[in-house]
View 1: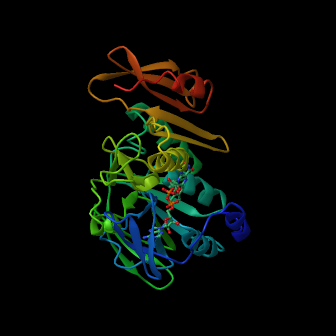
View 2: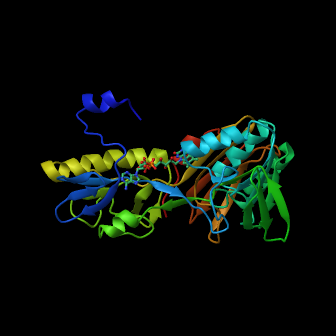
View 3: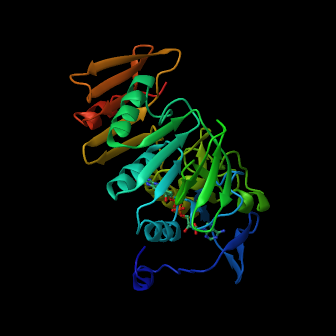
Length: 324
Ligand SMILES: Cc1cc2nc3c(=O)[nH]c(=O)nc-3n(C[C@H](O)[C@H](O)[C@H](O)COP(=O)(O)OP(=O)(O)OC[C@H]3O[C@@H](n4cnc5c(N)ncnc54)[C@H](O)[C@@H]3O)c2cc1C
């Protein structure tokens, strides 16, 4: 993230190309492929990886996850000529990718196994508006449909679907979520659930070992957000230091999952819960067919805010969202 000199200037002993194989929780040492090192405190922030579903037998240059810089380079070179693209997963990253690919002149489809796009972030009404907006632009959307199998065909990937149909794509992009890499924690006897389990001080159940970012699980929630990872990183660093120096501990205040995306005339924002049985959706702005602003209310408290076509007062209203 910084030039090598930055780490030297700041007294950080950076070891790149070095993987931690195991953490010895009793001696607080790490075992790497290039030797062992001891510490007073350890912060585990090894992130997550993409979910690669069983229907993908091998990652190829025409069937790959949307995850890292290497994936981005492969995708960029595939986009040099107009092609058919299938995006697997109708979450915010899939939708943003679809919009950008469409603008670059490609034929784009999104497949989502749930009944609506971004089901964890938007109500039925809001998701339907998003779908209509994307379809009007020319994006083909397949809902309640799953990919069953993919076959590498050299310059393309042949894909078969749960509805029995089959199609050929120059690019199949997987955007179906994050998978926590728990093998290091499990090999080290650090307690895990969906991620490495921590308390609000980001302490794991092992003495002087902290976890933060995508790998950390707090109150049964694992996040996948650079913003939250950065805040957690600060808290974990302060507490790791406090555990050694005897200073004060800081608490990480968990925030609601939020998504915001603005691309051209497409704008969506969501924070908090989507409507479910005990919640009500109060639409306070539906001035035209492209605009929607709503509060999600549960037991007379605002538990979510959703907006389409505008971000007016989103941050102000997001601050009123309450945990229930
Ligand atoms: C396509 C995409 C778009 C995204 N867009 C956004 C966005 O717009 N806004 C947002 O807030 N978030 C976004 N995110 C999420 C965000 O990137 C992550 O939440 C964030 O990077 C998590 O930071 P982290 O430090 O926990 O993990 P990472 O950034 O994944 O860093 C973990 C590091 O640990 C290293 N590592 C792993 N195992 C070991 C080991 N055994 N030994 C040594 N090193 C190891 C890895 O190589 C990696 O460098 C996006 C993610 C993706 C995939």
